[in-house]
Length: 195
Image (cartoon, rainbow, N blue to C red; front, side):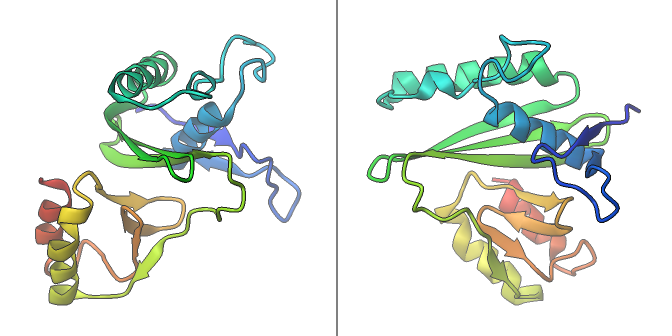
């Protein structure tokens, strides 16, 4: 089984001054975020790499543009990250009024069977705050009812485990009390990820 290791792309340091290092699934997520945020020319040993989102600048998003953008992203991810990850879905959420494009990439790490996702926001309105999760502290049947009620409004969202924050997430929701030991966990998983 391959071992994935990456240093923090923000250059954060531990208390002892050493660089923050990620292993396994968090290392892959860190590398993906770096790849999406990089501009062409920022990789010193590969100046043609990076800048995958540059092609979306000043584009009007219609069906054809969206299809081409998804193809370019999928092609780039496959070229740079295969076989470490397998892309499951690329979802665009377009907010034309605020000039924001939300890109969610759902993927699996075949060597470990871990499913995860990253979400990237592009915008020119820097007054918009950074994304934060909405905490959900429900348990058991109440949490199950929450999933049943919310599923129609977020059909593309997947229930995933955040290995960096050590919590379950579903779309914009952080599920504070959810664990695989929960008596309704299997039902919740089927509702969230089963269609």
